[in-house]
Amino acid sequence: MEEFEVPRHPKHENMGTRRVPISKTIYIERDDFFDLDGPEGQANNNKVPKGFKRLLPHDRVRLRYAYVIECNEIVRDPETNEPIELKCEYFPDTKAGVTPEGMARVKGIIHWVDAIKGKKCTVNQYDRLFSTEDPGKESGDFLKDMNPKSLEILSDVLVEPSVVEDALSAIEEMKDDSKFTSLAYQFERNGYFALDESSTGSDNLVFNRVVSLRDTWGAQRQDNGERGQRNRGRGQLQPAEQEGGAGNVEDVRRVAFRAATILSAEPHPEADSLLVCSVDCGDVTEDGASAPRTVVAGLAGKIPVDEMVGKKVVAVTNLKPAKMRGIESQAMLLAASNEDGDVELLSVPETVPNGELIFLEGKDKSEPDGMLKSKGAQKVWDRVKAGLRASDQGEALYLEDGTAYKLLSSQGSVMTSTLKDVPIQ
Image (tube, rainbow, N blue to C red; front, top):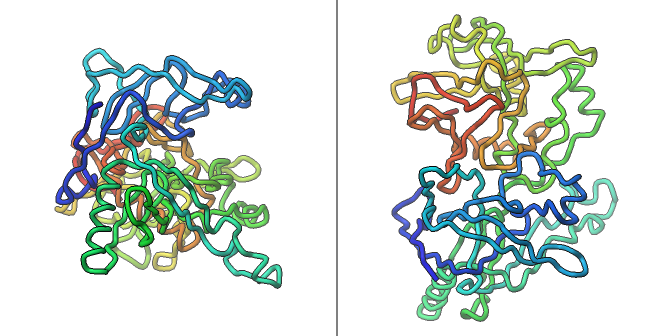
């Protein structure tokens, strides 16, 4: 048994630290292991899913805040052949994020909980009461639109001991002043949860999910008619953009970061601070011709036009189009900036084809929404934008829960040229 001291919050040091135990037996999410040799692998033609960076048979992954492990053996259910236990080796010199000399850097990071010291609780997973945005509109009876999964009760959920310690303190405070003390957490990759006031002690702890990590309400795929109309207007979207957004996908993987080339840039006729750019984002019409997008950018006077034209950049291509002083902007160009007002577009290697989806090192392949259109979906971009930053080496990063994920193309990192350790927007 060993303990790690880790931050309570990755961005707020004033919240202090917590102790996380680890022993020889831990639990991980089933989705964090892909069983190449079992039914799962057979269903995928014994191929690793594209972009999968987590644990594989005879491969390595890092346990967050702890060690690198390697899966050496799979124990299977004799009837279903499904994996029920993974026997792994851990590497002592990889503690707390260290990559020793001579070892290749492990890209995948997964969360876990200790099987011996972890504590059981009950989780009420609340979701929307109705399955449609306008109950009864189509069916004529709002009761028919009730969401059968509006409450899912999960028993024997395992949490870190520090969660139980905090909960017991909150319960004691409630006993003293008869006022319920709010206690809330983000349970990693699952959502935000609050202690229920029915909790009475370590043998009866209940947490309620108050919000998931992403808004699934507006993530329904657009029907073929809507897509076809949009295609005729400005070129056909890439396949990943057409079909993305379904299922439980992290915010950052819902955003379409694409390699693009600026073809031209002219002053906006109605605004001195704006440039009207023609940008090749890889879109094509039905007959295969290139269909550049119009992008209105607030870069006039900040970047010389001759430095912009021909530059390979990153464009966010699934934001809702917005009119800027009378001209519709159909994408957004990502740029870094500092407090002095210096601005610099992100750079992508010249050999990367326009339209290629930029991915994040250590995360699954992106699954962009067709368009971040609903109010909830538009907030996805606000949350993602807050985590974008250039490192002190000029690498474009996405920061999440204390981990930095590089923005990568097939030909290497997305970079800034001169601005370092600054926000990207």
